[in-house]
Image (cartoon, rainbow, N blue to C red; front, side, top):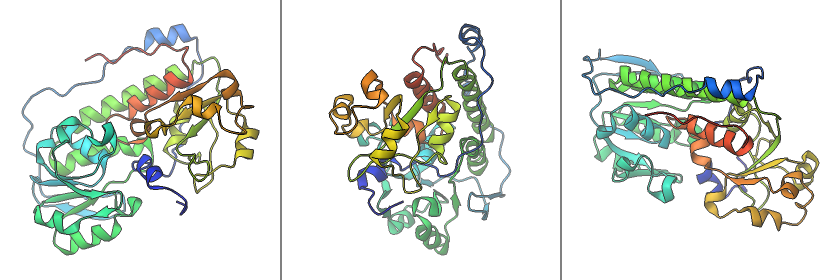
Length: 337
């Protein structure tokens, strides 16, 4: 990322992945037919006994390192918000003894059950000594993907098992739920969660493909010190493909000039920085923005950047949020409990 990025921008992109998968929407059909067909329920985890997992287990992490986990972890430190969400979703939340600071829910974090877990890292760095003092038997880190590489090296040198989880596509993020389940002895529960997320994403993609149009969309993540928007080759690009939209992307430094944005003429503007005060009225008042189709039509909507970009159990909710904002004419069936 470019040096001009602000702390606010870093926070809004904490869970951002960097490479997009080649996902293509399904062929269009009539909206009414698809809406009637998409009423599948996300599976829920039944409170049944889990068979004793086989340990030790050796797994290859997202940096290509073979990591051997000697026994079922009982004290886990999570250094990415997505990992924290996954651990709680698969029933291992009671083992999390330390976590990275989470900007979700006005700094309360997600899920709410994780609120009181001690914070051992922030976007600014990892407190290795504090982690060592917690005596974890497993640390899950983003590695170099979120500038945690030095911490990984130090923790491993201290004899602590570290697994790097930094998926680079939506598909890898879903697969990563299952891998993490293997790592903590929750294989069946993780498979249930992953299958549910995958099924819901496929259903939503099919619905989005029935939209009447494929609008040009600008996704705003920051306008302090420049205009910042993700490149197409990012998780955003993949999510917009799944949502049947044409994303107006930035460069590799996540920037786009006003001239380029005006030329691209977005039909919809989504405010990923809404949590930091961005509003439709503020966009309309900006010099040089008034001629854009989205501004003239009032098609400027706030969205939850965290749920859209975090590669965890809620990423299907993020896709649903995008589809609702981009294609308000579509009726999305709720997920039954």
